[in-house]
Image 1 (cartoon, rainbow, N blue to C red):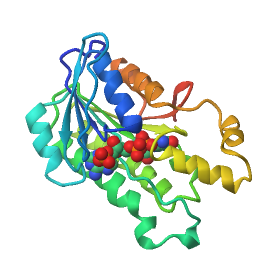
Image 2 (image 1 turned 30 degrees about the vertical axis):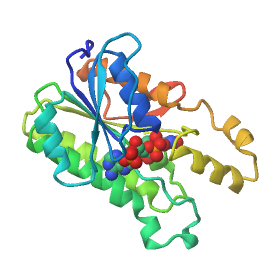
Image 3 (image 1 turned 30 degrees about the horizontal axis):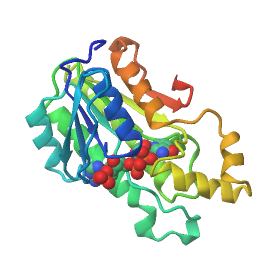
Image 4 (image 1 turned 90 degrees about the vertical axis):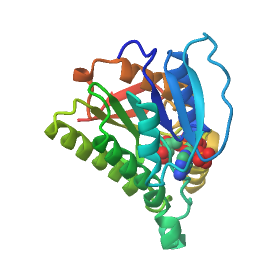
Length: 248
Ligand SMILES: NC(=O)c1ccc[n+]([C@@H]2O[C@H](COP(=O)([O-])OP(=O)(O)OC[C@H]3O[C@@H](n4cnc5c(N)ncnc54)[C@H](OP(=O)(O)O)[C@@H]3O)[C@@H](O)[C@H]2O)c1
């Protein structure tokens, strides 16, 4: 996959934030990109004239959407980034509805897309990346069910890899667990909440958080991951501002 030209890439959740950075990076690397979101947005032409991004307005959590887009575009790369912004409150200030929002969005979207990728199936050699969260490793006490939902995305991705292997489909599934990206929809309120809880300013909190992820650095890291030889790809990586780090 080192040459992405002609490799149709669907980015699920690409209107803003990390997903937009990923869609832009794949287009600049030469891939024809299909950018899925519920909001209609426009994308600039890639600066080097390669690739290109076509926006598709759809609710990725609707059960019929993955089949329809996979049939229409026949992608070789699918990246599931879409997720809800969790309600940043301690446990006792959550309701069941706010606690479960990432299960109803992030987990639902991952379930529908990976199930359909196996059923279609994508062609041999295809690559699938699910964007989970570093919170899946250590918990996230101010965001309700977020961390558990992101860990479930990692489980689902592993289950999909097992099923693909059993069926001899030659599809590689990878989970990427980003650390804070403090300027985007999920990251910005999380950083504010954890800074307040630790009694520090956002700036002080971010200084102690290590190298930070940006939409651009996430895009560059995922392009590199898809361009790598599938045999060398690990099932899961933590992503911080210094790049991808294999998880055992
Ligand atoms: N930012 C961080 O610090 C951080 C850290 C770790 C993990 N993550 C994960 O990275 C992902 C992106 O985070 P972000 O901060 O970039 O979020 P964001 O800025 O809020 O962007 C979320 C994207 O998902 C799309 N989306 C949400 N629900 C959708 C649906 N039902 N159908 C189609 N598209 C949908 C949104 O588009 P529409 O609203 O237009 O549909 C938007 O493009 C999330 O899964 C998040 O959990 C983020």
